[in-house]
Each structure stands twice: as structure tokens, then as C-alpha cells.
Length: 228
Image 1 (cartoon, rainbow, N blue to C red):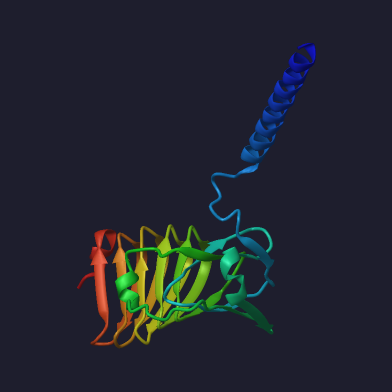
Image 2: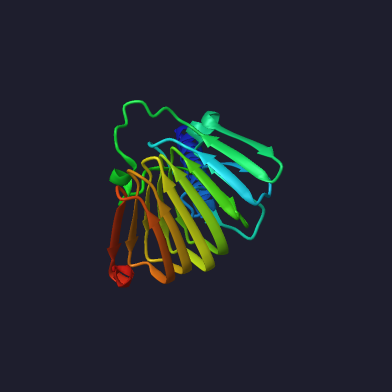
């Protein structure tokens, strides 16, 4: 009988010890999680430093571009790493992120008011020009003095963009740019056939527009003062 009690006590002790150890391990793992970083599980890839960037995407996945003071870095959805490629030619970096987009029918302007699932984040320190091809891309909390962005078959969204000098925006080949509650010293926009630009409460000190008769222009909030 004593032996049974001893065995039972040992089993209970081992079980409780295991539970405590498991609880400690879970707590340690829980504390390691950065709940403010939704991309902590993304794969990190170093990027070269360059002034000019060409980004090719697909209409099905969102690409986020943010400003960083650290070294340039790409954060990639681990399930889609095989679709990510880069190459550099002089001071220009070409980034291609092209998951399968078969069956997706939305036009760029149809995605103007929504952000798709984020699958790639580019942290860039000081880009001067960006060419965006066949993509859905968001400039988020991006602060710079000058920037030139050209769109081709793409949708651009901005969120808390701040440009202290000049922002040149070129939208062609069925592209659409939706600027949000941003602060831009001088905006120079060129909008071609079947393309458009939407200024939603965008604060602009100087605005120059060259638009095709078939271009779409939508001004709201603060941007209404540029309606003539």
C-alpha cells in the first residue's frame, strides 16, 4: 500500500512539475511576441541602398513601402518567398513580387478605397524615384523631401505621407492614385487616359495638374480648394 502511495505521489509531482515548466515556457514565448508588429513572422531579406526603385507586383497582393533610418529591408510573407526577386543595375533596384493573380478582375480604381492583404513590406531609407508596375502599393507614414512616383496598370494609396518639397505623380495605362490625409508642399500630377487621381482631404500648398480629357479627378475635403 505504501508503494502505491509513493508511486502516486511521484506521478502527481512529475505532472505538476511538467505543467509548471510548460507554463514557464509558454510565458517566455508569449513575452517574446511583439504585438505591435504584424510582420514579425515575415521573412527578412536585405536590400541594397539605391535612389531609384522599380517595383513590379500583382493586383492580388498589397505591397507596403515605409521609410526607415536603418538599412533597407524587405519583409516577405513566408508562404510567398518564392515569388520574390530582386536585381540591381547601377543606382536602380528592380523588385518583382508576382504571385499568381489569375481570376482577379478588379480594376486599379476599384481597389482605391481598400488595402489588400499585405504580403510584402519594403523598408527604404531614401528613394528618390519609384516606378510601380501592375501592383497595389501603399506608401505608409512616408516622410521625405522630394519624390517621383510613376504608375503603370497600378493602384497607389498613401497614408500620412509627408513631402516637404515636391511630389511628382504620373499615372498612365489604367492606373489610379488615391492620396489620403497627407501633407505635400507641391504636387505635380500627370494623369493619362483611363487613369485617375483621388485627393481625399490631402493638404497641398501648390498643385499643378496635367490631365487627359478622359482622366478621372476626384477632390474631397481640404483638396476641394483646387477645384476651378
